Image 1 (spheres, rainbow, N blue to C red):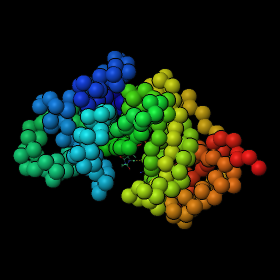
Image 2 (cartoon, rainbow, N blue to C red):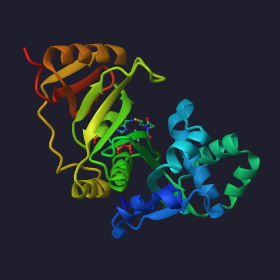
Image 3 (cartoon, rainbow, N blue to C red):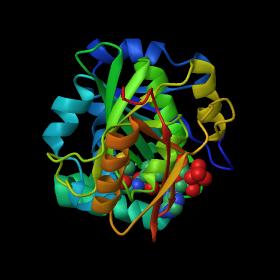
Image 4 (tube, protein in one colour):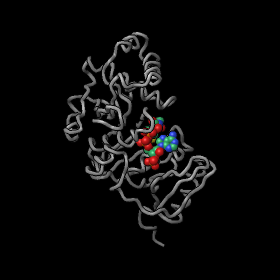
Length: 283
Ligand SMILES: CC(C)(COP(=O)(O)OP(=O)(O)OC[C@H]1O[C@@H](n2cnc3c(N)ncnc32)[C@H](O)[C@@H]1OP(=O)(O)O)[C@@H](O)C(=O)NCCC(=O)NCCS
């Protein structure tokens, strides 16, 4: 599959016995490749996904037990690869730096000769007990200006196949704009007090677009078929915590709200755009 001038190929990293139905939901024309987490020939790839996650998230990089127990065993990590020859030298240095830090010098030495596909983006979600809901909790993209965040999430939501997705993000995270490409972000909790970043994090839900709209998003990263309500308020906040306070107050006064496209208007000052997302509370 060609996106821009580089040769991106979709991948699923999972356990053969569990992940096949997700693979089957992807149209064959996308040319997705499956990597089995217990196949020894996939070990370097598995490590590169973790190194990529750590390169993107820094301090919040994914612990290995989470990658196995919470992501690739029960579900699948999904994203795009590029051929090794198309990886910029600086990105390759960052990936091998994290591989060495996490897996040791031997693992890093193996990568000296690696010429397989390199994961450059990833999304992971697991099905909640409600079978209609996917909880999405990891998204990264390492190639700038390729709309890779949006395309990766679209690919993953197509594979997971649920009508609703919930997740957390921060009021000032530019990822809000990527999430908003999928439709309005219904604000479930303006403040996720139990998150490791309690002052900045909120919980949202989206109604997952239909498969043909997801395929549009995979192809272009743009969202022509997804309608957003017109914005009703712009919230300008001194900090993410202030944004949470203001939104909490608005929800108390006006009823449920959703972030509407493009969601985040600016980070400095922090400005977000909201619209009603359901009927106002009874008077
Ligand atoms: C968040 C992330 C996945 C976005 O990936 P991406 O490929 O840059 O995003 P896309 O190109 O798909 O862009 C989606 C939107 O985000 C905007 N965006 C992305 N990075 C941005 C930045 N640094 N500053 C401003 N806007 C940005 C794009 O302009 C685009 O907005 P638009 O559709 O209104 O034009 C990537 O930046 C990343 O890996 N971040 C670190 C990890 C992280 O925070 N993940 C999110 C967890 S919720």
